[in-house]
Amino acid sequence: MAARVAILVSGGGSNMLALIDSMTGDHPARPALVLSNDPAAPALARAQARGVTVAAVDHRPYGADRAAFEAQLLRPLMAVRPDIVCLAGFMRVLTGEFVARWQGRMLNIHPSLLPLHKGLHTHRRALQAGDTEHGCSVHEVTAALDDGPILGQARLQVQPDDTAETLAARVLTLEHRLYPAVLRRFAGGDRTRLDLV
Image (tube, rainbow, N blue to C red):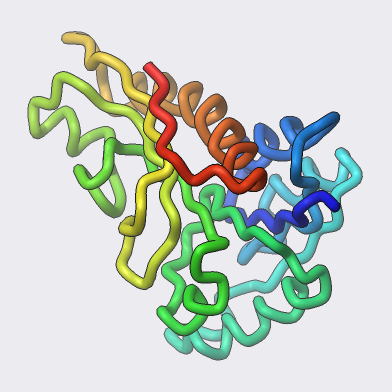
């Protein structure tokens, strides 16, 4: 029985597409739901075009009440009963209570070589820090932001003429390789770390 995967997104969903497109053939998982906090997120139409069930729960009416927002977010999730939840550019910080529900079954992709540069603006910060290497990480989600066991990393050399924009574009190509590779292993029960160079 293939593992059921729910993917949470906020924007265009390029990592979401990489995950969906990888879950074919002998892959041990299948996409069960794409869920967004923005009903206008382009990712929803892109997922629908691939035949994946979609849902949206607009976070804006809930203001700072994250618990109330998450209570609504749970409804479509519980309807499909996912085995794995993948955050793929989901731009809302989740509460510890929500994360605990999926402990050991929730993954995230982050555009830095964790534990470096947690949070936002990672490419600019990598350049400001004078990093010679940069990349992305897939990790298990815990209550702490961009924390949790690292399941995989992909890295590249920072070039002298790199800008935050060029670095972002180069790292994104790594994300599209790393996240599907880690998900395949994770869904098959392999939690050993994967390093792509």
